[in-house]
Image 1 (cartoon, rainbow, N blue to C red):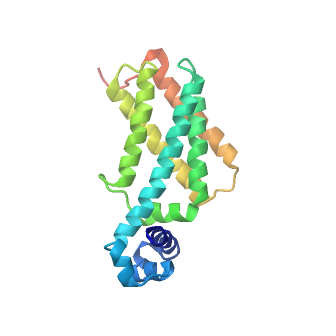
Image 2 (cartoon, rainbow, N blue to C red; image 1 turned 30 degrees about the horizontal axis):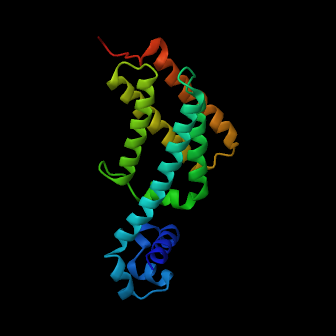
Image 3 (tube, rainbow, N blue to C red; image 1 turned 90 degrees about the vertical axis):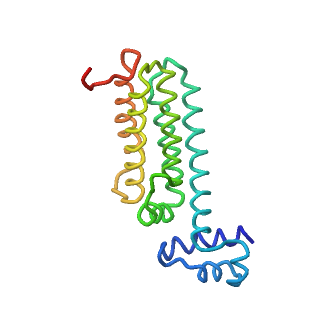
Length: 200
C-alpha cells in the first residue's frame, strides 16, 4: 500500500505540481480511500517528502559511486578530468530519466538550508573536499571552498541543460563542463595544494 501511495504521489506531483497535489488526488490516483491514505501518511507533505527522499537517495548513490570509482581507477597521480566526466555522466543520466520530476523539484520545492536537497549537496561537497585533500590540498578551508564552488556550478549547469534543452548534444555539454571543472580543480591543485588567492 505504501508503494502505491508513494508512486501515486510522484505522479500527482508531476502532473499537478506541488500546489495541485492533495491528499484526495493522491488517494484517488493510488486507488485507495482517503481514510486508507491517512493510515499510512498524515498529509500530502509526508508523501511528497518520501518521493523526494527516494529520488535523492538514488541520485546520491549513483553519483557518489561514479565519482569514487573513477577516482580509484585513475590513481592518485591523475588529473581530475576522469572523475569529473564520470560524475557528469551519472548526474545527467539521473536527471534525464525523470526530467518532469526534476522540474517540479527545482521550480516548486525550494531548497531550505537544513533541507534534504541541501544535505545531499553537502555530502557531495564532503566527497570532493576529501579527494582534494588526498591529492595534496593542504588548506582545508580552501579545499572546501573549491568543492562548494564546483558542486554548485555542476548542479546548476546540468539541471539547466536537462530542463532548458538548449539544442546541442549532451556530449558537447559533458566536454565543456569537464574542461571547465577539471581545469579549475587542476589549477587549484597545482603546486600540491588548493591555492588561496586571498590576501595573506
